[in-house]
Image (tube, rainbow, N blue to C red; front, side, top):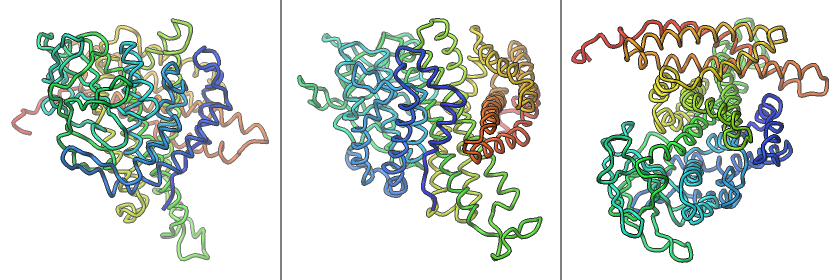
Amino acid sequence: MSDYKAPIRDMKFVLHEVLGAEHLLAQMPGTSEVTADLIDSVLEEAGKVAEQLLAPLNRQGDEEGCRFDQGVVTTPAGFKQAYETFSQGGWIGLAGDPAYGGQGMPKTLAVCFEEMTMAANSSLALYGVLSAGASLAIARHASEELKQAYLPRLYSGVWSATMCLTEAHAGTDLGMIRTRAVAQEDGSYRVSGSKIFITGGEHDLTDNIIHLVLAKLPDAPAGPRGISLFLVPKFLPDNNGEPGVRNGVSCGSIEHKMGMKGSSTCVMNFDGATGYLVGELNKGLACMFTMMNYERLTIGLQGLGLGDASYQTAAAYARERIQGRAATGPVAPEKAADPLLVHPDVRRMLLTMRANTEAARALSAYVGTQLDMVYFHPDEQVRARAAKLVALLTPIAKAAFTDRGFEACVLGQQVLGGHGYVREWGQEQHVRDARIAQIYEGTNGIQALDLMGRKVVLDREGLLDVLVEDIRAFIVAEKDGKVSGFVTVLEKALLTLLDTTALVRSASAENPNETGAASVPYLDLMTLILYGFMWARMVSVATRALENSDVDRDFYQAKIHVGCYFLDRMMPRYKSLAEEIRAGSDVLMAMDAALF
């Protein structure tokens, strides 16, 4: 069995050589102290946490799972101690506001850390991820009193947090929620209702659990416009800020799931629980989206991380396992058979996994730089431009990373054949754990609809234009350079995207079904172009690096080989995706519902 190894070398390549992250961060007052040396130090320490603290508990957590007994949830053996060590290292508050005890590290660095922790042990990592996301929503929208009371304890990991949206009858359509909040004379609210699928809703890792709950006041407007956000602690803090009286919050049960068994997924009941308003009344959905968008990128990183973990196991297995002979003749005549790597289809699977993983890693860091510019850049115009890119890229990152991450887990399982189907090698757990990432934090179909509908067809801010500007600037700069082959294909694909976009916008004006019919293949088309953009940049850097004699030549040559595989074998799919979109909605909508 292959142990997980944090991809520190590749992360340094992306941050330093492709994106020049330290130079960007040096331009912004909030991140100017984050030097290249500090980035490397954090990455290396995070790698140790992932490899030595989280990964050893991954299989045990899956086999043991969480236990529920009369409202009490017990996490797998070792989780509590590991979580305490993790928290004491300051990792939950890595990107948190320093004014309340956070580390103040940039998102560019946090995305790398989150990928590693998700790859090593997604179930255990989720508890900290939710606290970080909730802390962001509190920091952006809550009163100063709530920030002072809750953020330091969340950043330290002494307390944890959840987000409570879904109800039994209301999943994606949050306007249908029935949870109610009634104002009290002291300024608090009484919150009553039931929420389902609440990750980390109850557990034994922390002294207190802070729930961010969507609810409606009795006289609130109908639909999403009437939703407010409330902070509801499991225990109400006493005068010293410590957990005091038990609030009206209880866990009704936990779900029995396909994967992620070390993560408690709870039914949470709120029975007149004391809650505190976060943000403005009836504007809770906007506040919650601060956390949701954070989590969407992070869940994308779950797919990316698990895909990489699967690749590492599969590649190690393919190097050692001997089966059959190479079509061109034996490469290991002294052995009974040749290693699996002599077979073209095994290489196809491994190269597909690696090409998607490394492109996604570069894109996640690219999105991270844009998020940092949104929050830290002193120029308002730069912040506004970055915000447009973040809005456009968030649904793509969530869906693309998780779709291709799951595909990588399945391919990794396939490389091992029968051994991939049994527990010993860990590949079947990767498949089970990765599958949920395509569903929660908004299903990938919803992400595609958000991209196609809100971000493209109904866009009035020019979100796509900003991305096109970045890609075209690269094309112009590299047109006659060493990656001209990449640039030529990228330019053709970009023109296809623009033509397809115009087609869908026009067709949707006549028939609203065209938006939904085009959404998933359109997101896949965007993904191919973005991955192609990342690969063109990485191959350009690697090619120039090889002009120097004192470099890790194997690393850069491998980067070029994988990039060329993506260009020749994967990038051409943009043509078929465009044809699928052009087919329109009629063939989808024509069949009578009764015939299904």
